[in-house]
Each structure stands twice: as C-alpha cells, then as structure tokens.
Length: 445
Image (cartoon, rainbow, N blue to C red; front, side, top):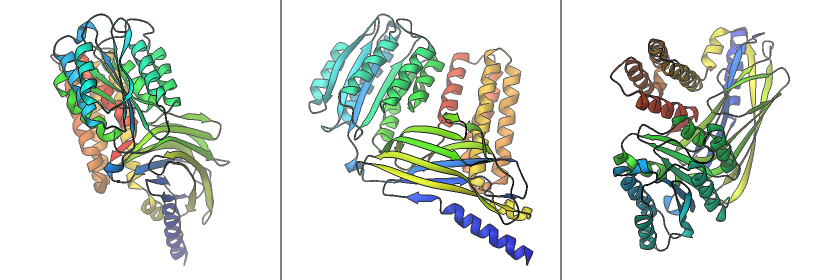
C-alpha cells in the first residue's frame, strides 16, 4: 500500500510539474526543477530552470528591423578587412526591405554617421554611400562609434521593431573611453533601451574581454572572426536570428518562498536580492530556446507533503501580436521516502544543462590559468571537462547530442593549451567566444 502511495505521489507530482508549461501563439514558457521529488527532510541543493522557446512562424510576416552597423575603419583595417567589412554591410542592405530602418556609423580617430537612420527604399544609394565613405585610416574611437550607433537606433526606437546594433572591430580601443567597464556601461544603457549589440571581433588583436562584455550586457551575440573572408557568413547567421525574433524586452522575476534560499545563477547574469531573483533577456527567436538556471537550497519536508518553492512572474513584448504579455507560474516540490521515485522524477534534460554550464565555468578558470602561463593546469581542467561531459552522455543517452560537440571542443582546447606552436591570441579569443555563447543558455531546435 505504501509503495502504491509513493508511486501515485510521484506520478501526480510529475504531472503537476508539466502543468507549468504555458504556450501562446509565439513562445512556450516552462518552469521546472531538476529534482521535483526529493527525499523527506532533505535539505540538499536543487536547480530551477526557466526556459522560453520561440515557435516557428511565417517569415514573410517578420517584424521590421531597426539596425545600426558600426564599422571600425582604423588603420589596422586596411586591405581585405575593410573590403570584407564593406561587403558585409552591403550584404545587410540587400537582406533588408523597405519596412526596415538602417544606419551606418564608421569610426577611426572619431566617429562619423555615414548613413543616418533611414528606411531601406533606395538600396543603390545606400550601397554607394558605403563604398565611397569607408576608408581605413587612423585610431580606434570605439566608444564614440558605439555611442553614435545607439543614437541612430534611438531615432526609430520602437517596441514593435527589432532594435539591433552590429559592432565590428579588429583592434584595441585607444581613443576616448577605452576600459571594459566604460564600454560595458554603454552596453547596459543600450540594453535598457531594448537595443541588443552583437560584436564581431576581426583577427587576433582586438580586446576579446571588451567585445564579449558589450555583447553580454546587451544580450547580443559575440563572434570571433579569425578570417575576414568569413564576415559575410557571420552576417548571414546574425540575420537569421534578427529576422526570426518573436518576442523581446523579457523580464523574469522569481519569488522564492520562505525556507528557500537562492545560491547562484548558472550561466546568465541577473540580480539576486533577498529571496527575489530578476533576469532579463532582450530577444527571443523562432525555433530557439533560451533558459536561466537558478541554484537554490530547498526546505525540508515530510513524506506526502508538497510545497510551493517559487512563484515566477514573466513580462515580455509579443512582437507579432504587438502587445505586452504577462505570465505567472509556480513550481512545487514533493517529498517521499522512496529513492526510486526520486530517481525516476529527475529531469535528465535539466541536469544536462546544469553540467554544460558547470563545465563552462570551469573553462573560464582554465583560461585564467592559461593567461597566467600555467598551461598544464589549463589542460587538466579541460580534459576533466571532457570526461565529465562523456559521463553525462553515457548516463543520459537521450540528451547525448547536447554535449557531443562540447566534448570535442574541450578535447581540442586541452591539446591546444600545451601546443607551444599554437597562436595564443587566437586561443584566447576562441575560448572567450565559446564561453560567452554557452553562458547565454541557448538551445537551437
């Protein structure tokens, strides 16, 4: 009788968990615990995963884009780099239509608006302006370039548009404000205006920490473009995201109940204040999941008891329906004295994502050792990462595809860490790009 009661409890709790997935026309929102059923009187750590998945939609009905392209035209961009940067900007123009808005800013010793914010209804004129006015020479006033890019996007700023900046640079900011903190603060200003900044670092001499921080603080993409010949392909991938945006200006508030203590956010950054956790996302794309992971200390409970662990409030702008949507979900925790019921209820997909984020944090430590010259220590961490992910793939074969690429990547970077003939600048930039993109918690469907 006791076993039947335990199994029934497990079944009801799992069904209850799945009820915390709400679907509307554009996105599915799911809130779930890694361990929805735990042993009685257990006070171990648990993990809350909140995911937002954009559904497929008719691309012909896409939302208008308000785009600024900010191009480094300093002396180091001479040759193929400036040629490919202009070709990529022209590619962008050809991807846009008359409903979209474009501006182009170029910076060297200062920043100049080449194309003021305008509708894309005369493509040949816009292309001519790019060909005639972007010549590589001078320093790198990156702060001024990004500032003017933000100002141009602001001119047509609307919650009904996809507001985006693409920032290109191949060097170190050396004119005006140049620190990571100062540029990050500018990115935060952009994010508050609902503008995402994607950063493309070209070659091996740009400041990867600065460029990745700008992208991170504004919820944009960061890409290491080792060969300028790849720029057009990078632009194509960026436009695939931009043109599939279904929601933006997302704010998630998590209210933890008494007895529940927030420990840390894994991956995405946010604000933890007492028992309230706030995380924002700028944009959600079609056929893509973005998630946050929150580690918590759970309260104790008795067999058969069920407690609400958290209430989640979510607000976002639905771009296709052109209205603000609000959702509220709750997450519950059940208690048992049957270990098999606990194991059966474990969310293997959530545990897999936890491991991916833990391994990513380890790779940050590996890069710190590498930068200090302790390459053996970096190699050891990355080799351990690979073994850890292999264990996940073996334990949860249904989700092995999520970690296979990461296993290979950690193996490669472990070998490259001790390769004395390797390019250390390229190594750092490749590591930083991977860490930034993993941290965002993105799963492409």
